[in-house]
Image (tube, rainbow, N blue to C red; front, side):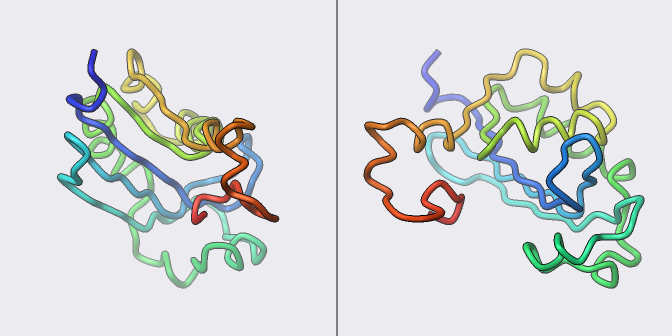
Length: 144
């Protein structure tokens, strides 16, 4: 398989915390790519089943008031899962974090991930021969 010729789905979440066993999604973003070009970009705020802790809001800027009236993850899961199922390659920065939360909280996600190739750019930048090009504190953050 030539990866560049396959559809990619780049995904990211913002959550209520950093514990994959308890964190809930407050924002879900998905960017579809083909041949290195963005073909679709979507982001949606999600109303979690619990309050958003102040510590989490300080990180991502999403507060309880921000998600009032927004759909729950269960309400939008079918659309997101269809996008995952349509892309043989899923890209997620720090994939174990996002994937663990989505597998636990997003109905149908685990099944849609069956057979998908997962690429995690964080793994690449942590390689000594690559990571040396990004020096300093916080060099492995997504923005860098």
